Image (cartoon, rainbow, N blue to C red):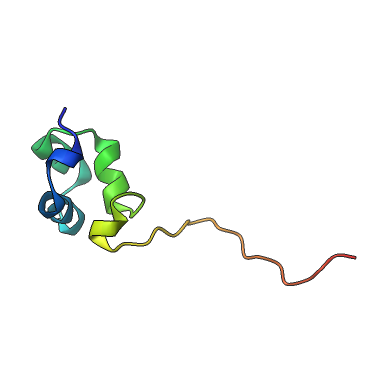
Amino acid sequence: MPEFDEFGPEKILEIYKSDSKQMDLAKKYNVCFQSVSLIKTGKTWTHITGATYKRKHEKPRSTMHMS
């Protein structure tokens, strides 16, 4: 499978902005599904996509101090 490093920023943005299903994108670019998922969710290539990853289940921090 080709590495995304070979694609360049244009292909990364194309994947990120695409409305296609992630599995279809993986097949189209001959990469694994997980790689596409990481781009789409903003976990990788953020310096190109401008995305920021936010955890779904992040617990809010307590403002109370325990003594």
